[in-house]
Structure formats: C-alpha cells, structure tokens
Image 1 (spheres, rainbow, N blue to C red):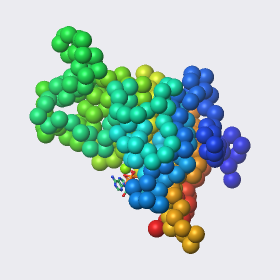
Image 2 (cartoon, rainbow, N blue to C red):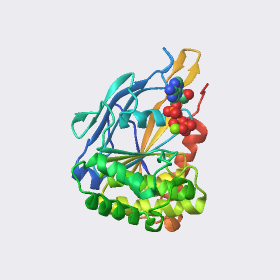
Image 3 (cartoon, rainbow, N blue to C red):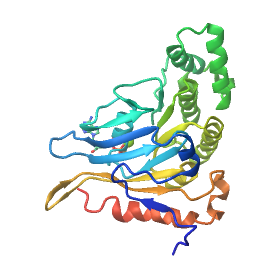
Image 4 (tube, rainbow, N blue to C red):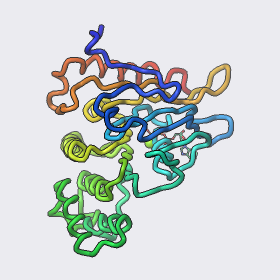
Length: 293
Ligand SMILES: Nc1ncnc2c1ncn2[C@@H]1O[C@H](COP(=O)(O)OP(=O)(O)OP(=O)(O)O)[C@@H](O)[C@H]1O
Ligand SMILES: [Mg+2]
C-alpha cells in the first residue's frame, strides 16, 4: 500500500478540475483550458467526449493511453490543426481557432523540409515569427537554438544526412526557436533507440528547466512520463457495450509526487517511484481498454 506521502494523488477531472501543483499554480493556473472537447469522425461514435483539463503556465503535462484513443486528435485540436466536434480550447484567455506561432508543435515524424539545411529549416520558422529581423539576427538566433540541442556541427547538413535522433533534435530546436507560449509534442522520441532517447530526454529537460516552458506531450512510455511530467493524464479508449458506444476520455489525472529535479538514472531509487509506475501500468493493462471494441 502507498503511504500518505508517497501516494500519487489521483483526481477525477469533472468538471474541468485540475489537481493542485505548487510551482505552477503560483504562476498561472488555467493557462490552457480545454472544456468539453469531443471528436466524431463517424457520426454517433465519438472517439472521445467530455475532455476537460487545464494546464498551468510552466507546467509539463503528459498524456498516455493506448493506440487509437485520440491523443493525437486532442493535440491537433490544441495546435489548431483540427477542429473539435464540440468543446473549446482557450490559451492565455483566447480561443484557439487555428494554427499559430504561439504554439510550437513537434510531430512524431519531425516534418523537416528535406531540401533545406538544418540552419535553413529553423531560419524559415524564425523568419515567419519575426519577419522584420535582419539576416544576421535570424542567423544568431538559429545558432543559439541549434547549439542548445548540440547540433552546431550539423548546421549545413540536410535532413537526409542526419540520424533519426539528430532530426528529432532539429524539430525540437525549431519548436523552441520560435519561443512559443506552449510546446505540443506528439511522441517526439517514439522512433528512437533507448540511448538516443535518454540523451534527448535529458536535453529537453534541461531546456524546459531553463525556459520554464509549458509543455503538453504525448507518450506511450510510462517511465518517460514519470521522468518528464508534473501531471499525467491517463486516457481510456472508446468501446462498444450492450448499451451502445462509450467514447474514450481522460479517466484520471495523476500528479507526479516525485521531486521535480529528478534524473533518469536515479528515478527508481526515489520513494514513490514504483507505486506511481505500477498505478500507471495497471491502468494501461486493466482499465484503459476495458471492454474496448
Ligand atoms: N482523419 C481521420 N478520419 C477518420 N478517423 C480518424 C482520423 N484521424 C483519426 N481517426 C481515428 O480517430 C481515432 C483516434 O486517432 P488518434 O490518431 O488521435 O489516436 P492516438 O491516440 O494518437 O493513437 P496512436 O497512439 O496510435 O498515435 C482512431 O480510431 C483513428 O482511426
Ligand atoms: Mg497518435
């Protein structure tokens, strides 16, 4: 059994509830508000329904769930790349109605322009964000962000000349370079081997720690969520029952009780780590797909 201190705090989300988080609440609770979101691709069979959550400024939130539950669809709605069937998304007090440079997206498949070098891929985004900047300003800004992900020596290479991990880092550098109010990451490390994944996770943690960036990230990896997230949204899949179709949704919100300054190699020594991990694995094994079609 979990002790009081070690027990991850698990909160239901209705309505729009958000468990407290000391450092983020102090900054700006409700920086991102998601209210009553649902999405139907097939009439009468919503993928998810009644999705409510909030993210505070400076908070790192992961969403975890099985394939097909609707994680990417939610992220695309937050990015303004897709529209919800019903519900609303507000960021910094304004309704999200389309894509915008205040949200930086890192796609699972990095989405770099293959004909441009690393530097030019990022410069393209920087020029869109600050059209009045001189070439020298753009170049200096690009170099700063390429340096942060350790790729200065690859500035003049094209994506085809890079490894998968390097391409992911370019995608991350590009998203950071436009200094978005919020980062939206769709399984950014999904295709990487364990070593590369660990090292890019460390870099991301370092940059997020420096910039106090607000992040919403999709992952399939329980340990990645425990390492990176302040809170973890557990999402269930839609399913067919005798009473009809039951949409998926956010089943629980888990507050990460581990100290924020955590390191990958030390995670499993921290009190509460195994309880948290077991709780999430149990959810994925026993409840996330319960009765799913
Ligand atoms: N454009 C679309 N048209 C029809 N159905 C779609 C479309 N996009 C997604 N879906 C369906 O919506 C559901 C959720 O898809 P989504 O990509 O959001 O899942 P996911 O949780 O991100 O899965 P994964 O972990 O595999 O990436 C799936 O059943 C998918 O088939
Ligand atoms: Mg997806």
